[in-house]
Length: 479
Image 1 (cartoon, rainbow, N blue to C red):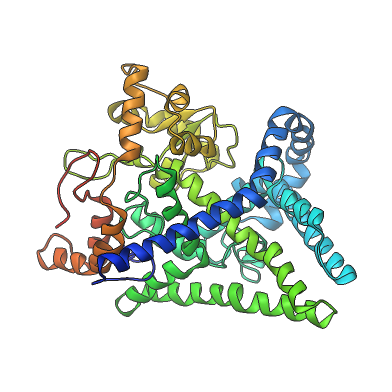
Image 2: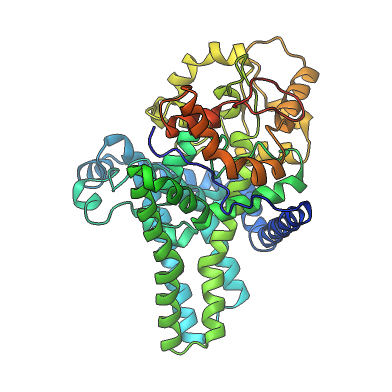
């Protein structure tokens, strides 16, 4: 399994004193709080108000318009013949056009206003944030979904060759710049780390060292995802693996190129253009902060939040291995599904299943769901699952839990979900300062003992196998 990483948290800090560790944790916690406050000030209202507006009226107004265009066969034939490599991807086309038109119109307005008046007024910044989010989160949700799907088809394979070979992944590497996405982050880190390790130890998205029912612990996790979104933590992993792994080496150079575009070329081009056309340095920096860096901060915090739903529960089988249908969740008949993103379980473990085939696929999983009391919910969104968990609203969450066995009482459902959400494989301090710095040595030891044939396989084994846990659980040690 080439590409599995050797740790995703970024900087390694072995041999630090307790006081030094506490200081680093305090700084990370403070940065998480800053991200939360920033999200509350600039993004909570656009997301919350437009979400409610969508559910309580705008959906009935806009959905028929969308459906009329989406079901118009000449448009679909055009998309199939000229845009996408597979017919199933034509489902993306109309919404992609709408979101792109909205985003590009808004960015043109922002540049026009900046060049004409020298600065952006607060009302225009808020309008931009609302347009960026979209009614029901359709703007940010679609942009994320398209970049995500493109990342699984590296090198523009989502599109016909005339697009794929010349432009590549449009949403991941081009439009994604407007949504806080470092180019190639999905093609490299998401595919070769997050999916190979399935949120386990070493994954930059690892979260089973924090209590998913604690908003305080969540501040540390928000910091972790922000570092991932910058590209840095994944780049460190690929750099460590590069000397012995060609795939990791290729990913290192690809992601480094994307980081150079996002962190050097893009700001240099935008700031130079604005200053040369009359903006003051302070005004240009302010423009760049609100138009390009705020989306990064918003998407970082939002991804951290929804990942509480995606991978917030953890359970192990009798051999100490992670149980997939518990450690990744599924939402049935969700309120805000975007091309199958609600079934995160299928996305990780049945990646070949398209969004069109999810219903049939889910029918084949029910025996497994009954056996393990899987993490399956209905008629809500991932963001609601996360909020119910973080604020300990277990009655609310239990209302939406789907017990396919029909044997659990409401109290048993609540107790089960709460235990799975609070269970840790280790503490945050142990993971960051003791486990991650030695994870490669642990993998090499497994190879030496003959338990695994390669370091890459051993890293994946470590990711998917239970470490002695805190707050319940059980299983075998990795080493």
